[in-house]
Image 1 (cartoon, rainbow, N blue to C red):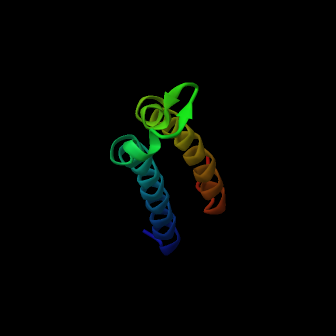
Image 2: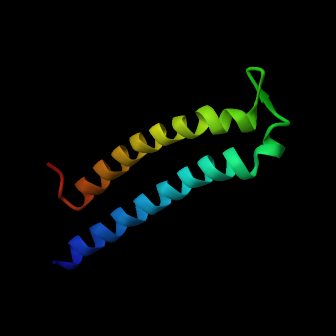
Length: 83
């Protein structure tokens, strides 16, 4: 494999790992570990910790899918591997 393609895959994996870290922080840390301090804040009458555990992690996950789509389209064009 050429150096250019190896660089492309390194960047691809770096993007995936970064986005998974964001998702893990939102899902686990905000929804589980930081739930007590977050519950002091209310959104729509519900504690923020509950909101992150029930809705926030799902919304962030869907947003990360769209972010991945946009970033990968840009990366594909940069390395001329787009369809």
